[in-house]
Amino acid sequence: MFVASKLSRHARRPSRKHTGRTIAGATLALTAVVTAGSIANNEPAQAEKRIVAASSHQAQQDTQQDTQAPTPAPEPTTTGVAPVVVPKPIAEPAAQAVVYQDNLDGWIRESLDILKANNIPASYDGIYRNVMRESTGNPRAINLYDSNAAAGIPSKGLLQVIDPTFAAYHVKGTPFDIWNPVSNIVAACNYAAHRYGSMDNVNSAY
Image (cartoon, rainbow, N blue to C red; front, side, top):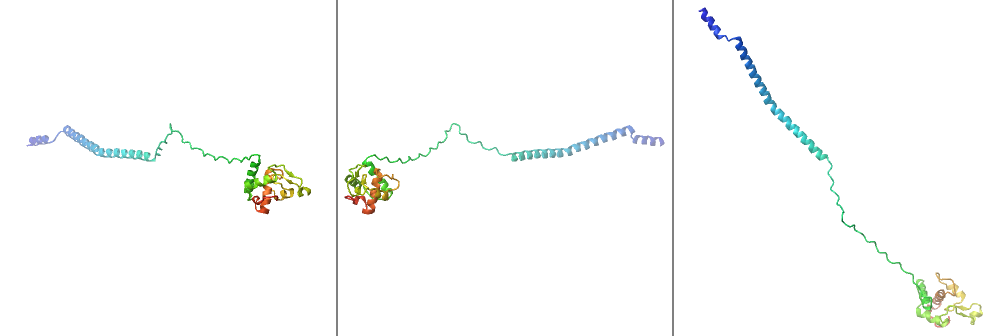
């Protein structure tokens, strides 16, 4: 009985060496499970970190693109295009001064322009007719035989004007010279306009 009981206990009690191996194997297996679990648990976290990092990098690139100034459109080039030439306005030719002939026709025409500018009535025919009667067209004609000559104020020039009459009816803008053909005609017409209405109304000595 004693022997059998001892053997039986001996048979049921495992050896310490075997027990140690069993514990070591269990520990290694547990460590492997824990490690595998840790790796499995870390994979989603690492993936999430990579996604967050990629999103942050893309956001930075988008921000940089938004803040960059837009590139201005290139200005059109004019190479090969002829410039538009604006023609200068053509200046109107200046009015040329009227040139009068130095003869009876020219003297009468110049006198008429001056008379018109001074609102003194007269006509070419009226002036010409009286000039031919008084002096025959000689601007240096003088009458030394009438009453005016006897009084010391002889009639002079184309229309035989005396000095006092010339001085009273001289028209400004003409030479103050009784021998000047134009001055003589204009003064005589001014006098005739005041006394007779116009040189056209004079048909004899006046």
